[in-house]
Image 1 (cartoon, rainbow, N blue to C red):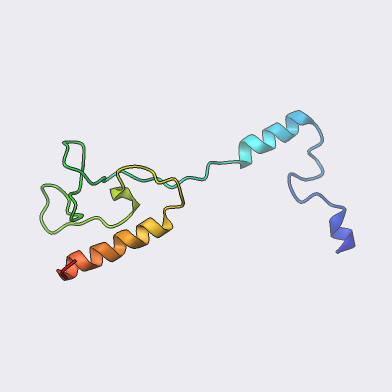
Image 2: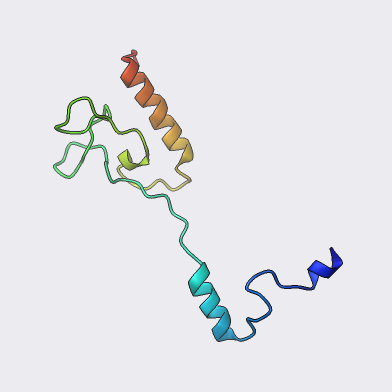
Length: 97
């Protein structure tokens, strides 16, 4: 591994100036986000789903993913999406909650 330690993996040996480094960063860095809220739960005219995850005005259609979250959580969305999926399964199976 000693030979590999001497080489720059990224952005590479050809990047030597601050301008080149900035150019590399602009081309390779992106945001890390979890979009939510495109089918948010609510009762106002802008909401798409109700508290039962049903799409307003369309029978037999539910949404069970991060898009039903009315706001962006302060943490990773994975656990919240799992909870939404569990709730959706109960709703679809018509189990008492």
